[in-house]
Amino acid sequence: MSTKIQPITRSRSLATPAHQLRKLTGAGSVTLFGLLILLAFLLPLGYMSVTSLKSLKQIQDPHSQFLPSSPVTVDYAGKQLPLLNVPMPDGSVRQLALLTAGREDSQFLDPANLEAEPIQWVGRWRVLEAVYKTDPTYDNFPLAWNQIKFGLLFRNTFIIAISGTIGTLLSSIVVAYGFARFRIPGINVIFLVLMATIILPSEVTLIPTYVFFRLIGWGGTWWPLIIPHFFANAYNVFLLRQYFRGIPKDLDEAAAIDGASPLRILLNVIIPQSWPALTAVAMFHFFFAWNDFFKPLVYLQGREELYPISVALTQFNNIYATQPGMLMAAAIMAIALPVVIFFLAQRQFMQGIVITGVDK
Image (cartoon, rainbow, N blue to C red; front, side, top):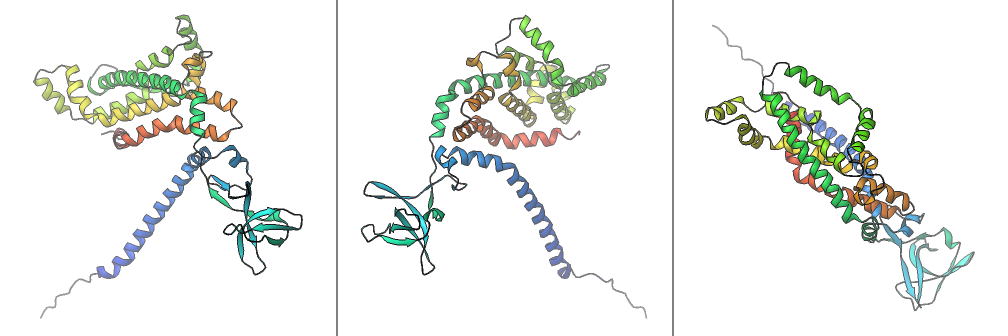
């Protein structure tokens, strides 16, 4: 008689809770770590937003809270009496309005019954904590807008950024298409030379390009900030080349059989399938041009009517250094448009970054 040995199996019901607990603990730890990093990253933005809603008096108040707040006062006989937290003999704390301030004893009024007799309190009123209320102010935004002429600055910056973005897209698409689809002798060497320009510091070419633009009469104009971007940038060419190489060549061959030229293939086959990568390149350059400070400062020196936001904000900071609320309000208005554009296009932007970072 033969006996059949049954294999020993582990009960899944016993292992599942422990496994799920470890999985939840790991996921929770990663999520918590990510939230801490995000919080640390957003702290400057939070401070800037809160400060922009504070008046100069609130900023200078040493007892003011983090949020925009002002001391609470009570109107009595045409006077504004401060409201303080006053400890009482029975151990409770009451919010009373200071009527008469004395050195060792003071008189307070009950804000709920101002007609009642004053309450005599023994102690130094200066050590009492004032009652604050949340009191944001929005005056900093119109003041900063008028002082810095944001309408003109937005126009200047937008023209520079959009023009350069169009030039970057046109030139980078054509160059990347050539590297991705055409087999020219020595094309890999040419591509390596192009990538090697990434390590060339811009400071090395600053003086020669500045002298050249001055010689051709472009000094004090937007042309040095726009025209160079109509010649492909190595970063953008690399991103688009990686994406173009991921598009099946069968589509090119099918279009070529139908009689499409290389330019037609680029316009009707490659570009319609490359919107994520094109969006990423466009946003990269738009943000770069929007935040660029050094080149506009060099080429537009003395032409304040042509300044972009980045240069004008520095001058605004030097003039109104004693008005932190106005400075923060101006900074928020300066970054508002890039932030809105990023959130509207973040899905395609992230998709383009992920795909172009992988060589298929």
